[in-house]
Amino acid sequence: MSKTIEQWVFLGVGGVARALMEILQKEKPDWLVRNKVLLIEPMDIKEISTLRLFPALEKIHEERFESKDKSCIWLKTAITEKNYLEILEKEVHENAFIVNLSTRIGTLDILLFAEKKGALYIDTALDWWDDPVTDLDRGYQDSLTLLEQSIHQKTRHVRNSMVYTYGMNPGIVSSMALVGLEKVAKILDPSLESLIALKQYHLVAERLGLTTIQIVERDTQYPEKTLTRNCYYNTWSPTGFIDEAFDSCAYTMGTHENFVPQNVDKEHREESLQIFFPCPSIDVIAKSYEPRGGEVHGRIIPHQEAHSLARYLKNGDYWPSVYYCYEPSDSGKELLEAARKDRNIPTRFLSRKEIAGGYDSIGCLMYFRTPEGLRTFWIGSVVENSDSISMDVNATLTQVGSGVYAAISYLIENPHLGLISPEEIDPHYALNLATPYLGRADFIETTTLHQPEGDTLYDLMVVPNKNLLSWEKVVVKEAQLV
Image 1 (tube, rainbow, N blue to C red):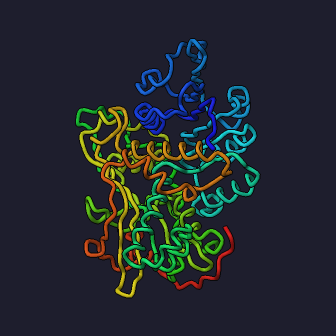
Image 2: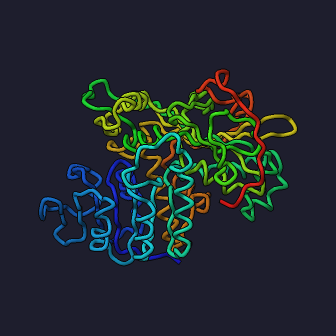
Image 3: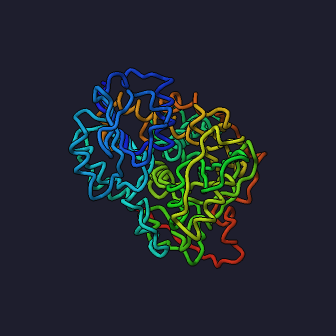
């Protein structure tokens, strides 16, 4: 039974919000009609063309803008740990849907507020207030995994549907991985069809011999030569990218792997499924592959899907390695190198009209140990910049917006699920809604196209160079529930 939404609350009106609004403008879903809208964004949004979806805004005072009928409100202010309760208690109504598309807003506190209000909720990333700089010796203590565990412990009573970390990745990639397992099963072992019908994906993964999932992304979008070089650019949130890239590298290490570098923190592997490097993720690179451009050398960036997908596929003492392997655009690489010296450099994201060309390829490269040897399959999407939903939104943001749209639709149709992870959204439902915005979506076997040395961290890691590290064998005991 679907839920009637009477108010939309947007925390952050950046690139992803603009992409979502463009998709809503095109799709015109019934649940968007005649709702009140609250936009909370400290940056100037008066020139954002996607706001044509809502009534025109007039200035009330320095930090408040309203439409004449008061159905749309923009608060030109930043949500902080000190003011969020005062603002939200005053402005958020009953039957609201909170869409958290900002950065450095404490996920747990917003979730608890949403639960108190009986609101539905979605975000695209877990976060802390102000996202403190990670102490590289405290990888586990400052990890997304530990934050997620805390969130689950404190939201067990939630009844209204809320999904955390559902955009493109995290988000749609988890749906791709599950559908990919179904497709691989038809090739390698059709007898698993009954388990697939029961959504026993953890059993399917183990019986197929799934060892590793690389969430592999390559971004080749490049700016127009005439673009003013007065700041550093990225194709999505520069702030979010900097925060992730300089966090401690977290690697979700499957039970098929027996060797780790001696200097990593492996003490929490049984409870978190992860090991933690004493260095930023920008400096740990792995080899991967995507069909459009071939071999990828991607940074192992900490992302929530690495943990949630591995946990979802865990069966007793079995779970696969899962990690995000990201080769950013040249602009993104320049951004990161500048941020090494100064985390507060001036930045902004690129719109489609500022991009001369390129594409964003993202998907799941899945490794299987079979009697015939190692076989690999890729399921994913390649979005050209020309495929973008509008001139204000690039390929990357179009992908993320499609995931947010799919998840919002699912929660409205299923409003009493409680707090769920991306893997608990019906993958076929999500892909059906998102695929029109995913460019060229495909599933192919890549075994003959991509022949890696193996499926472990030792085989695939590029930096730090494995020949310069001392490795040691570890014994994995059965993990506790996480």
